Length: 182
Image 1 (cartoon, rainbow, N blue to C red):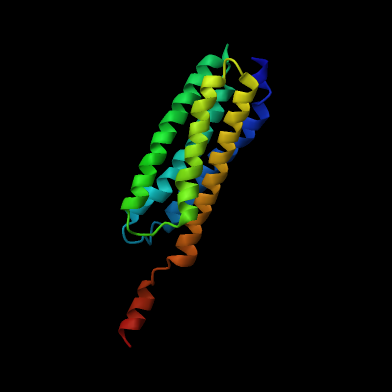
Image 2 (cartoon, rainbow, N blue to C red):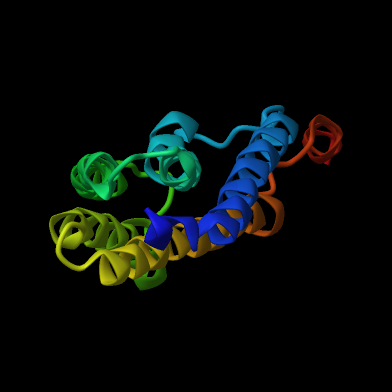
């Protein structure tokens, strides 16, 4: 399995980044928990949870590709199943984005929360079929999918945080009391 061994450093870096970013997301969500927006649950299911799912997919993919497989067949079946499940999940995210009413998504939201993850997961599923006959090319497809998920999730995490910090700024209790006195 020498072809897969060549990817060790790549998946150490990508998997470590995904794991660290999952931790940072939990820290940020904890800090923002004191001021949840209206309809936070629906918006969280549409925008926040998918980011964690995609980071987790990259972390899982990195772990799968680091396992000492005898052949690539088992790894390919696992990443293919992840790709199929992720593509279905992307459709679920699209439905959640349409149904939530806390925020009106723009093109960039549709692209980064639905389109790019769907392409990444579909690439994983397609690469699983090519793994036995075109191993090297399939592994490039898997690597590209992992990076696409990682980078689109970094974008989404940043977008979520900047929205809460710069756009959604609920008034504090002190400001409400001061305004009531006027």
